[in-house]
Length: 238
Ligand SMILES: [Zn+2]
Image (tube, rainbow, N blue to C red; front, side, top):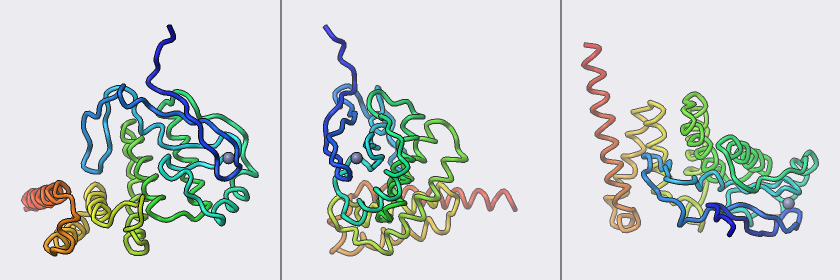
């Protein structure tokens, strides 16, 4: 009897070159979510499904997050054919992924998104995941670099995009993640400012029902953490 692997291949049509391609998914029964960091970075027992979220077409080089692979418009397709496919050397990304292979796939997706001038929220989502991959590797320098990129793009997204569109991060989670990333990057005043905007929205009955209350609790905890940290730092310098 063949051994059952935690991963399997599934078929999808590439929207850029129309090839029928395969990409690899993880059997959710084979894994368990152990915990998540405050910026939602997940830790699993068993194979990490995050490694497989970057889907790459082996034929034309188009790549996207698994949840948005099919949502690409005419203009973006033309950009990919021009900027990516012309330089693409055919290669496969199916099968088991190491952390290094996952990084390579995610960086290709980031290149695709930048070349097709994708929405900032989508770019931010990929940058955040690349930062997590570096966190798993204890590479804090590269982690910070990609947290910075994620933060900048989430801020742009918050200012420019309609975040009520389906499939996008909602405005509350976006505010939260901006506050959280500021905190991770030691911008404590900014962090408090962004978390406070979320707390202000929560005081408005029009918004309150839409805000996950766990997000609010975490935001309040994080503000307290920052205040304690700042007070302690002040004490040290006195
Ligand atoms: Zn393709």
